[in-house]
Length: 113
Image 1 (tube, one colour):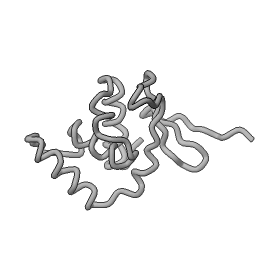
Image 2 (image 1 turned 180 degrees about the vertical axis):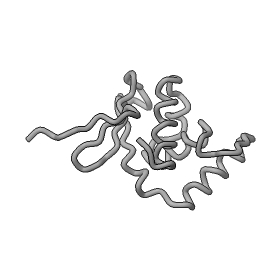
Image 3 (image 1 turned 90 degrees about the vertical axis):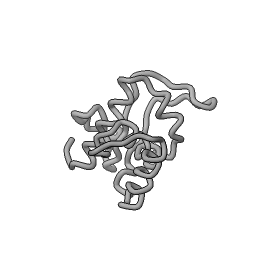
Image 4 (image 1 turned 90 degrees about the horizontal axis):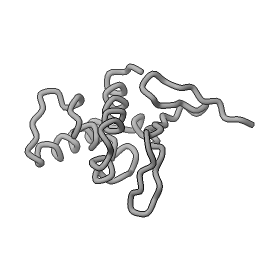
C-alpha cells in the first residue's frame, strides 16, 4: 500500500502518521552516513526543559538573542535534540537547508505551517 504524503508549505512532508519529514536540498555525508531527510516528528515531545537547555547552550556560546525561537543557532540546537543528530551536523548544513530547519522549528513554536 502506498504511503499517503502531504507536502507542506515549509518544505516538509507529513506522512499518514503525521510525522514531519524535511527533504534536504542535497545529500550530506556525515560520519559515513548519507543523509537526505530529517525526521522532525520529535518536536511533539519537546518540553520546556528542552527549551531551557537549548537556551543554556546558546548562552554558553556567547550568543545573545531577544527572541530565541527565531535565532538560527537556538533552532539548530532544538533540531539536534528533536532529531537525535549532533549539533555538528546542523552547523555543517548549507544555508538553504539551515533556513529550512529554522523555519520548521519556528513554525512549530508558533503553531503555523
